[in-house]
Structure formats: C-alpha cells, structure tokens
Length: 401
Image (tube, rainbow, N blue to C red; front, side, top):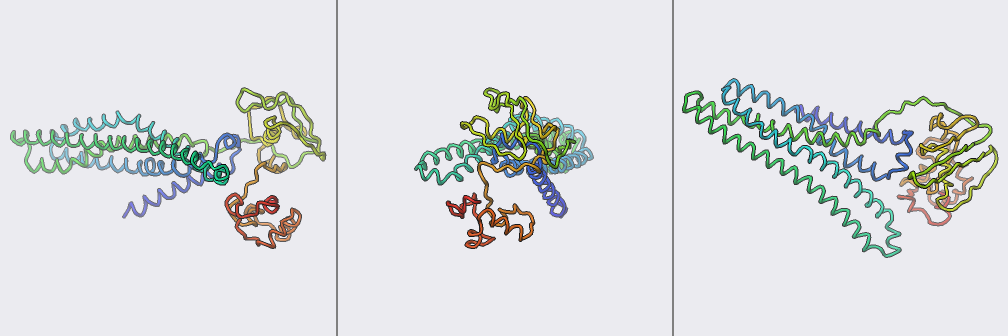
C-alpha cells in the first residue's frame, strides 16, 4: 500500500519534471547551435527511450537498492542472532555474487550506451522515411527504403537483444551463485549440527533467511550497475537541463544598421563559408544577397541571430556587438522567415497565432493582408492543416501558409 501510494507518485512526479525540464530548456535555450547541429530525432529518443531507462534503472533502481540494503541488514542481523558462525560463512560466500556483478558492470554500462545510440539512429531513419514517403513513392524507391529500414531495425534489435542477453547472463550467474551458497551453507550447517554447535531448526531458519541476504548481495551490485548505466544517459543529456544565467545587454531597437566586420566562419573547420566578410546593412534599405548554393547567404542571417558561435570577427547592431546581447533581445527586433516553413498538425488559426491570444480584429486584418481570406471562407478557422500541412492545397493556399 505504501508503494502504491507514495512510490508511484514519486516516479510520476520525477519523470514528469524531468521531461518538462528538458523540453522547457529546449524551448528557451540560448544554445541554438546544438539544435542546428543535431536532428529532432535525437531529442525524441531522449524523451522516449532514454527516459524509460532512467525511470526503470535510475529512479526505481535507487528505491530498489535501498529496499535490498534494508532486507540485507535485517536478514544479516537475524542470522547473527541465530548463529554467528553460520553468518560468517554466508558473508564469505556473498563475495561470489559481488564479484560476478563487478565483472559485468563495465559491459552493462557500455551496452546501455550502445542501445541508446542505436535507438536514436532508428528513430531518425524512421522519421525520415515516413516524412519522405511521397518522394519514395514518386521515385519508386520502396524496395531500397524498405531494405534501409530493415537494416536499421535489425541493427537496433540485435543491440537490444545483446543487452537482454547480458542481463540474462548476469541473472544466471546470480542464480548459480545462490545455489552454490545454499549447498555450502547446508554442508556447513550439517557439520555444525553434528558437532552440536547448531540445531536443525537453526539450519532451517538460515535457509529461509538466505534469500534475504544472498539475493540482495547479488542484486545490489546488479542494480548499481544498471543505475550507473542510466546515470550515463542523464549525464549525456545534462546540458539540456543546465540553467543559463548569463547577464547580457538588451536592445529594443537599432537606429543605424547591421555591420559585419571581418567575419570568418566555417561549419567544419575546413572550408570557410564566410571569409573576412565586411558589409554595412543600413536601416530602412532593402538588400538582395545573391550567390551560389552554399556560398553563405543563409549563414549571414544565422550568425546575426546567434545560431552559431566560434566565428572570427564582429557583428554589430549599431555600436553594440551581438556577442554582448541576449538572444531573445535580438529575436524581439529581427524577424526571420525560414527557408522551410513548418506547418503544425493543428487548426489554421493556431498556425497563424502560434497558440497565443490576439484580438480577433487583428487576426482578421492579418488574414486579409496575406491573402488567406479565401481559404478561411472555404475551410473555416478551425480546419485541421494536417502533419506538415498535408491537408491543405498544394497550390496557392498552401503557399500562403
């Protein structure tokens, strides 16, 4: 009843806070470069596969370790009370399961990390194949893509199977250790009974108590190994939970312009996307930046938005270096239309407002200005756009969204 009431609530609250903490920091983090360099499937894997391991092996594992330690202490005290010689024999035998877990601990940690990596890759390729299904059908690449999925799926399941087999091997070793200890205890008990140092009732009590000492001695090591493996996942994702309390300047506007001063930047530290780039973008003027694909047009905008760090040179809003500005401060005065416009699987109205409350007159004004009135009249404000906007027309209406 205590477990039902308190332990389940503890795990529920802990997992809920952990997930919320990670997602909130993803939303509010200034470390945009991490999300530019990574893929969404990695974070999906963190919020699904990794959290399952953390829940079972870290949260519940920690509680179980405490539980097993209590069982071990109470069982050991009972044994000492009954016969200290037999207790000493049991303690010596308990070294066996402890050594078994020590042998497998490193392999278990590495196996847990490998499972996490394979799960992340599997989620990534699954997401790409499902998102790109229309393209796959168009180019009749079903066979190749199916084989790609099978390859990743097999690789993931083989890795998970190796992890399960390792756990089974540990369990078999623990069972064998317990059996050996039982045989040794029975032999020593018979000897002490013949010598008159113990009674048959004492031996029977010891055998009954054996599970409360030997099993915890073995399980504690296994649980600690699993907890260590889960802790590796927590440490791997620790940056997602770190607070960023950097005191930077804020700006509400800029008066003169945006100035790039000898800016050099490379994505891979080999080829420079920008090489000593200098330009003055004067306020209230319009500019068209022309260049080949990969020449750095988008990079200019992303550097201005502080999506990347590690560039050489300086970028200024008026006389203020953007390195000294809060990220949110920059977003407040600069609007950036992405190359790929994302449409949420929600209503038209929520895609327009992004779930914020605006006056209906203002919303209608915007709808008229961007040419969406025809679509609203035809579909309604609450029409579901579908994943990636697939419920919308591929023609002009979708183009506006």
